[in-house]
Length: 78
Length: 216
View 1 (cartoon, rainbow over the protein chains, first blue to last red):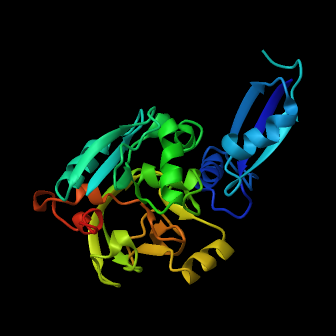
View 2 (cartoon, one colour):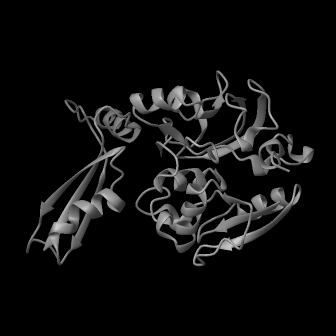
């Protein structure tokens, strides 16, 4: 399976990167933007997708500070 | 007293840590691929950018062969000191609570900071008085200490907050001004500032020796 893992800062934890982007957009004339958060994207081919949550918990994300979301991305990439 | 200083690919403060430890005892390098602590009495996990800090600071280093031994050593009461990236690695490995996030300024900051010793009862701080101030340099981009509030409350109840930035010196936005924490047993200490860079008056302070040399 081709999988995509989206990793985001947990809600409620200060995200200065998101804030910096949110402040920069209006400065470029892009108004009406709020709640910006910056995270990471990991794409991978995996033989056993059932093991993805454990991979996320142990390495790809830090569950204390990040939420992750696993997406099936079969056939759509590379 | 023999110290072992871990060297990962990307470590950059291991030589300063080695030289600092040699001012108070013997010290040698522990290579990340060797699952062997060479019988040392204390382990220092130094600053730097282990494994390039790829993915997340300190994320990859916890799987290094040497870290399995450090974990075993720590769980049996062995003395472990994590400095800066070493602190991040120990948090990532679950030996210390919490995590380090990017500074609120998103900038790399290098400056001398004043720390207050809030727990002088663990091996690493036993040469200090409670409330004593230490002048030690800090230099990092990812040093904002974070743990959820209930965890912070529990840590404070257990006296696990060992060092705090004094008012005005919490430049990275750390929760409750926390600069350094220990595990419940008190044998593992992690801190963002660099005691190994404060061992000679030539560079402004020798307060780092109070921590590194506490057991000697």
